Length: 205
Image (cartoon, rainbow, N blue to C red):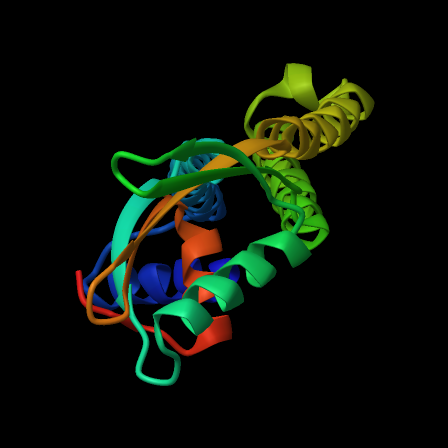
């Protein structure tokens, strides 16, 4: 592709009356190649920055509040279904606040094996692309390509371990039953979304 582009430029210059030699054509191609590689390096670095941002967001606190409403259960059934749902997911009651009729549960959130593998693969590809561009642009890296490959592998493994250790933590969920079969919940966004989906609840706020 690069050859065809350079050839097109050369033909255009010849058509305009420029006297091009083989040396001129080679210099033009080399200059154009350096520009493409520099742009590719910049894009690769930006992609790695995006990967780092995604990695940080995967382990950050995602606590949120929702008010859910049931149209299929009465208040007792809603409370029972909610309790059974979180019990099946490994949550246990750790605090009861009678004055506010609020129940707090705690459970361990397990990291996703699928997301771990995705992060490892994406990090490996990203670092591999960066290493490939560097070996082309910088002679020092081309002589040490094995070290670049090792760095890419260790970086990918490190990304997976960072997510695995950061996502494996204790999460708390607070519940409060309100009139008209409404349920106020506060906890990890994914857990609340799973509760809503599992019990067929409607989010009102």
